[in-house]
Amino acid sequence: MQKFFLGGRLIFGPDARSLPVTLLLISVPSIIFCIFVARHLRHRFSPYNAGYGIMVVAVVFTIYVLIILFLTSARDPGIIPRNSRPPEEEPHHDSSVPTQARNRHTPGRQFPRTKEVMVNGMQLRVKYCSTCMLYRPPRCSHCSICNNCVERFDHHCPWVGQCIGLRNYRFFFMFVSSTTLLCIYVFSMSALYIKVLMDDNHRTVWEAMKESPPSVVLMAYCFIALWFVGGLTGFHLYLIGTNQTTYENFRHRADNRINIFDRGCPSNFDEIFCTKLNSSKINFRALVQEEVPRPTEEAKAEDVGGDTHPKIEVDLENRQDLLKISEQRIIEEGIDLSKISQRQNDEENDSRESNDPLRSTLEADSIMGINHRASLTMTMIRSDPEPSSYGNGSSEIAADFHTNSTVTIKEAGRLFE
Image 1 (cartoon, rainbow, N blue to C red):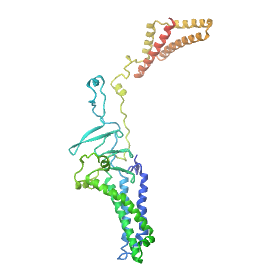
Image 2 (image 1 turned 30 degrees about the vertical axis):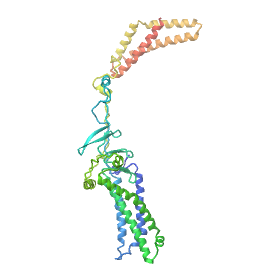
Image 3 (image 1 turned 45 degrees about the horizontal axis):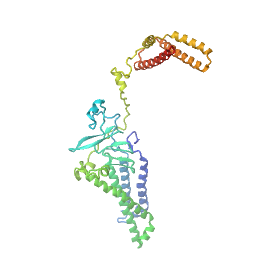
């Protein structure tokens, strides 16, 4: 996730720790250049102090590159706000399912993963992002590192520790191109200093290089860096001229599809460098609003007076109803609790005379358990005579009591068989 500083004014990517490395790769060579090369060129040109301009240009150019790097890295690249819930879409049916099969079952909601939108008079398919729960706008993509959908997503640059998108692409290109020019400048001035050493004492190239090793190191460093930043500069010049992004170029290279965003080279450059940037779609300094929980199906059923337990035919309102139902159930089955107690006493007397103590003990325990459950149920029901509405809870109590009472009556009935 992004890292915020100064109350949300600065927004860095999740891998912002790589930014100090980039700063060192730019600032350290510039410092070495000013100390070991530019300082010796101060009085080498006429007028006498014209050589100071070489050091001033190097310092100003380095500061400019670092500022552009900061603007690229500490800026919202164009993050699209997430939705707290999926968008409401009209349900539709799958045409591959037979009509008879659809009629036998309740049609379910099938959420479309893509949809068609019109861009510059042509249809473009946009995808649904399950992480952000939204349909991505055209040219938008979800960055797996930042875990956000970014407008006009170009790529995620580890050197600046940030996604490159709509709101920071121009600064990224300025950073890459400025770094290229800085490398060319340092390389040229270091080579010039080697030439000055050769002309002073009529030395060879190797002798001049031995006298100024820092110049050789800077030339080698800038030569290697030019292959990277120079190549990036050329590649992005091509992308800007054709109005493409890095993501689109690599993904759709083999599709041979028409670029519907290309408006011609001049208009494409004008779109990148002269178009006013829109403000961020997210107020990163605002307070987080507490989300209202989405009502569940059970809550909706309660609001409309629906029954969330369709298997229970009668919803009891109080415990007095439970008492009446239990007494009615006992009367219908013709079971007398006094007979159960009498039967228990008889079984106890028989068990004393029985030669099988284990069997008699099990039968007595069974009778006592039945009598205890029946008596305990009647006592619990009578303990709270005041009526109280339980809603769905009373339905569950009724269901459990109905089941337990039925089991108890059946077990008691078997004793009289």
